[in-house]
Image (tube, rainbow, N blue to C red):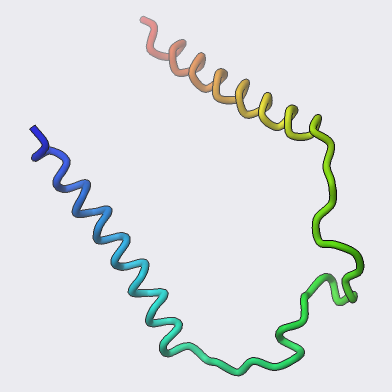
Amino acid sequence: MLTGYIPIAILIGFAVVLGFLVIGIGMLFGPRRPTYRKSQPYESGMEPYGPGTRRVSIRYYLVAVLFILFDIELIFFSAMGNSLP
């Protein structure tokens, strides 16, 4: 019963191992020349001022969630419409 999932588990395991391997090799052999200039934040060549985050109205998040909800509904409706004879 679970033998059908073995290839998926192998693929996920391979992807995780490969991801850690690539990151580890990059950290091991990658260049390490930190300087003061490289550690500075980059923002269009300007010195940053103020906090990096700003308060956003809750309406922004509500509109975003509603947009995603209706977008997914339209995808399902179009998929159901294509399956009709």
